[in-house]
View (cartoon, rainbow, N blue to C red):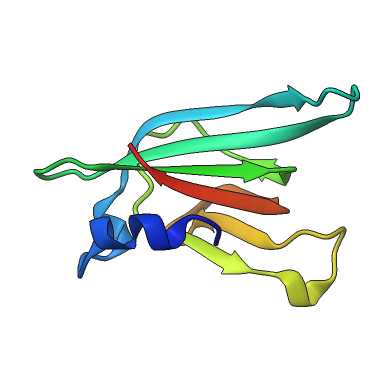
Length: 113
């Protein structure tokens, strides 16, 4: 995942499940200079405990989106699905605790906030 090396030190030995509080969630459409558009999801997750660091994840060209009004993602997973060969989708993202919030994306980027 692009940008993961930059945030790996924030995770340290902590599992991704420590970042389960949904600080912000954006699902919308961006438009390029040439007039083409694509759907994106920007998800910022925060630790439940101190030091309460945040990790930002941006997914481009998202598809197959299902989500609910949630404040917590207990079992976030990001799985490579390139081998499926579906419409150039590379990642499947979801919550293994519940199937209410899942989507697929062609690209991703992670940052520290």
